[in-house]
Image 1 (cartoon, chains in turn orange, yellow):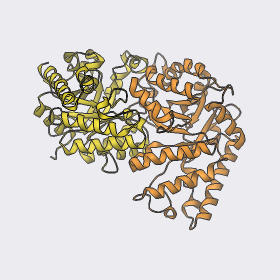
Image 2 (tube, helix red, strand yellow):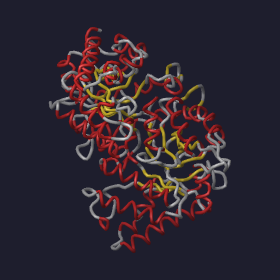
Image 3 (spheres, helix red, strand yellow):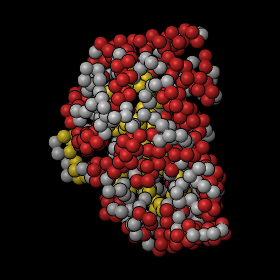
Image 4 (spheres, one colour):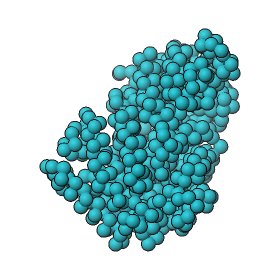
Length: 290
Length: 290
């Protein structure tokens, strides 16, 4: 069997010793002046993203570029997100493209080509998706993932307070998000990998460990993508609640790794690099010991 | 009061005599060879989109570029979608950017800047959004819309068969989509316009007229964006079920206008133009008489 997303993620997790996903959130107001003015010059954003990839390659299980922080730079930002995806894959880092797309029919096919397909697509290893439009909106992505050895990451229970508004609504005695998880079971079973994990990933916020355990019970072979760790306040133990012995998913940290105080205070690139290395090492240590 | 999205849409509907929204879905396999090979050359897509805008300007209430059909062309496609949005606004055509974005916190702020904000953003009049992440995921878009005289269009009940999987789930005796509609009521009231309509738009599929009437009862001042008319099979009367005397929203037609058989068979641009004009005239006639 050819290696698929789940195999690559499992191997990268083993190699780096922790299920750490580095979230690439290039915030214009927080990119250090060392890289130039990110508010007016997309070149500063390019240099920053490349420098982060340089620090993270080989030391994380995955990179998660957040498209919502690239698109405000216009077509240049969109191109950068694609270029950094290609650079990460070349360096052996699996890429989970955080795009939260969701549409129907041929439109969904278009997004599947754009995100998982080869150039001019992103050729990402996995893409995050929104389930509100129902299973037929996910099918083109599932088909593209199976054909290309890729994965999909579907929102089930997110980490924001407003997640309660829709996701927690009571449907016959259980919250809506359990129905979403159940809807995904056939996809989990269809998207097998040699590693034993499915190429179906689910987004389960770290701020709700009890819910992560319930999702794990419904979807025993699904990979977990856990946001909310680090700057969003969840502990490593909470974040790992849905994983099994440190495998079966990744925990994403963005700001605690990209913008630690020591990096923000750095007066030269060497000091900035050391601060980023320290932040990655600290996250790996926390997530490998939990 | 300065004119806002709802005012511009209402004026354009009045001027064209029908609530017709032209959906701009550049499908590589259906763009006529007259424009070149759209599968390999994005220039053919550019020329096609510009030619459609030329036919539609002044004859429709809005243009709806579907980003899912631009992103597969990569950064060039993304840039084209932005350029055609700018060109449409210059010609006085309100643009509803069909992006179905949805994310939280600063990421949602990023998408709001990218879609509704000025260059390098799209500066669209309105953007489609997915509500699964809850009200706090919509707030940055609502704020950006109010600040910029723009609108947002939130998915409530879509036109695809899979809409049943999540949107129709029973929550305390009513389908989930009624809860989504109720959640949007404060936004409807906050997003007022001089026209009397709210700058809150809701997506309500034309294939479900009974549901459109229920959404209208919950959200009396919301604009409706009705997909599913024309090639998707809904009648003009069904599509207009949520509107009031032809105002308070638009009905979107894409393939019936972009790819009518006569246009596909045209051997020269003049014949192609005449076929597109006929398709627009037919849709306007249907939607003005309903």
